[in-house]
Amino acid sequence: MRAAPVASALAVVLLAGGGAASGGGAASGSFAFGTAGGNVVPRHVTISATGRVVERGLRTKTIDVAAVHGLLTLATAERFFSLPKRIECAGTLPDVAALYVTVRTPARTRTVTVHGSCNRRFAELYAVLSAVATIGR
Image 1 (cartoon, one colour):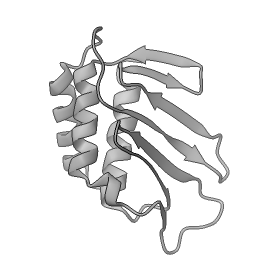
Image 2 (cartoon, rainbow, N blue to C red; image 1 turned 60 degrees about the vertical axis):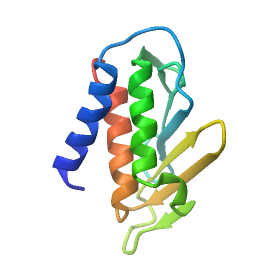
Image 3 (cartoon, rainbow, N blue to C red; image 1 turned 180 degrees about the horizontal axis):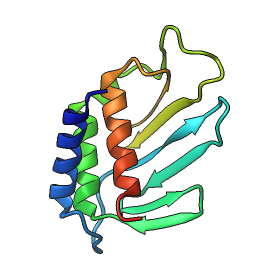
Image 4 (cartoon, helix red, strand yellow; image 1 turned 90 degrees about the horizontal axis):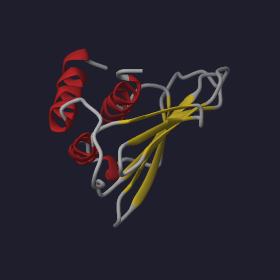
């Protein structure tokens, strides 16, 4: 994954939301992402339409609703809903955890799981979701 596109996408998301928590309103979608399988502790993070971030029920924070809109814009730009539901990357060992992202909108829900690191569009969305969920912790 290239650092510059991820940094650019993260900047767009944060600028959309000012990078700060706020109340009021809700975006038109939500996210869940994390890891499953392999030899690592599973990770499960949700970002609600109102901006509430919850990681495995243990850590919570709130991001700006405009940032959630920015994440939805990024998912659309990366053509997330056209990705295959499962992507198996050649040469990935079976004990490597898979990454997954679920995007929910009023019109559709899609979960994509990737075992390995061969899909740039998925990797960029996952990296930005992970960065947004950990900023300011």
